[in-house]
Length: 218
Image (cartoon, rainbow, N blue to C red; front, top):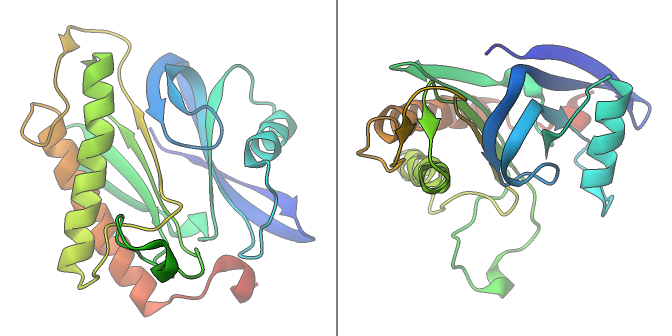
């Protein structure tokens, strides 16, 4: 599932946006501000926004963007300050992963609130699995993505488990036998973990080499 790269006006600038137009209503799980939870979705998008973004209704904003693009039916919307043209793509045993990696403010999940500081930086992961998953397996797949991300950050030298604004979207198949598990040693969780791990490693190294946010660059 290759995304389409489109541009829209955002704050007087042409902002990039990745869109995956799904072939049908596909079982999906997401933690994104639009279309989060479990359900059948028709599309997924990952939108770049300025680092100064301060709207408190990202779901409404993403809905408006989807309407402008002619996207119909329920979908998933994610946001990031990262230039989505820098998306990292990996694949493993039929699983495809697309990650945009921003590590401006990585944090430990259980860090004291006073240590969080400015919450800047987002890691968004969109994954496609060629298998039908039970609802429990979909939930487990999100945990697998998160564990693989944390492993990659550890290997990159970060004392962090992610950023405070990370999001995940896992798109499964709508046909075939139902797979009951999505953990890191399950049939489909294992390649998912490997693909995410490699995507975050590559994206993290790219970010270190060029940490300037999209809006600061343009």
